[in-house]
Length: 369
Image 1 (cartoon, rainbow, N blue to C red):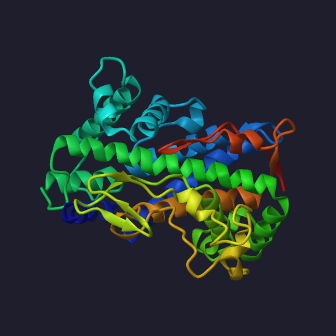
Image 2 (image 1 turned 60 degrees about the vertical axis):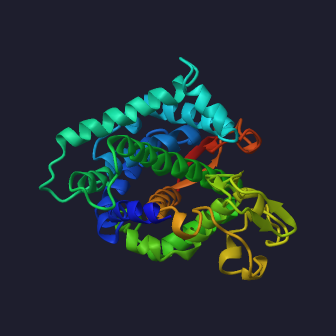
């Protein structure tokens, strides 16, 4: 716990209010790049799952590493995206049996999915370290981590291997989770046109001059936008089952169940957040439950898509910024609907829990408002 608290300080600097202010226009630039593609392909079927990943990965390339990954311009899955998914598939399957994961990592070829991803992340941070000017104020997350590492700050990664691991966290936690949440939000807006229309009315009220008058400060004032994001995270959290924890040596008592010490446990986030004991119509998409209809949530209703306490997600504010900017921009400019051959069923039923979430394709049409 003490080590975690020290290490977190380096990360928190990269997500401070000051740092986020420098990230905001860069996030908007990537979202506008995606919007331009949509405008040139109005009425065409777009795979929201793939394009949400392209967008999120490009954002994290820019604000995470200070470089361009160019997924939006090439429209081709970057090798690292495939590496992320291969890595997560292995972790999601084998993390329940830690000793088997250790064995697999030592069998030649058995762990090629995540070993290639590890190499790519290591190469990226090595290159960043060569190019980084320590006399300049950091303008991306990895630079803040490098600054702590070079200055041997108490919050720095204790070794080069730990620094490489940090680079993997930037990619996985910063891009994959935001992408799945954005794709899920687009699914719900396409499935619920009345909710999309209500959001558009709220946006039009604070941005009456249209997209040329867009600003993040105005968007942040639209509480219904946050309600939609909250409800998306309520029904489809990016980490469906949460991270593992190890019970203390003396064990723990959970209600009537005693769990011995040194046992891996996890709290299934989605299962608990959609329990009818805590939420009315727990599995229905009702953004109003967060403000207008608070009676739909009990006082003890659990909601922890970003985890809680000292282990809560340090990148929450960046994720929320990216989601607010993306969803508000798309909703203000476009009508969002399923493609003719899409009903969204496979997007829900074929979702895979692979530590992070692996989504099926989601074919959506955007029409100009």
